[in-house]
Length: 223
Image (tube, rainbow, N blue to C red; front, side, top):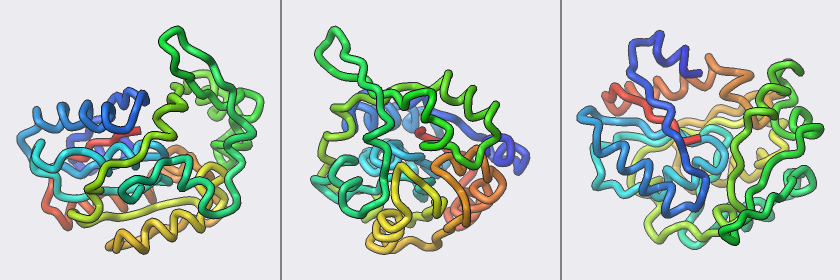
């Protein structure tokens, strides 16, 4: 997806989402946005959708949000509470918890289950590399309630998801897109949670549509 965005001439930054907690991670993305003079489109994947929903709008000229197989929480909702709103997620069964010395718990997807759970439409060798390189999110981040002013209530947003997503059920993503008043939704048949990898062109086109609508030039992804 990043290659497709760069080929279009849009400067693109793949932000290093800390994956430690919603408020703290949103602040980290906000700090990056403060350094960008141009308007930006914030793109969130998976838990990253909760992060971009909580970025302070005063950090810069944020023109649009794009949710790519991502959570878009209402005030007080967490990724965990959203996951239980509709049936279909099998993520909990695939997780491997790793307790940390600071009292938090990192959550990995078990490597032997990663392909089926996260990236079923990605070639097996590539899915295996993704499993080996995965970065853990904390359990605390997934249960942390979202802030009281979700950014999607203030800005235009776009949504994309795969109808075979086993992390965030398609029914939940349709629900979140509808209540956010999404400008456009893109449901990709047969696609997994890893649609940015398996269907990069389709996702990039949606991001570019959001960029054109907001006359923006610099997409920033929080993954």
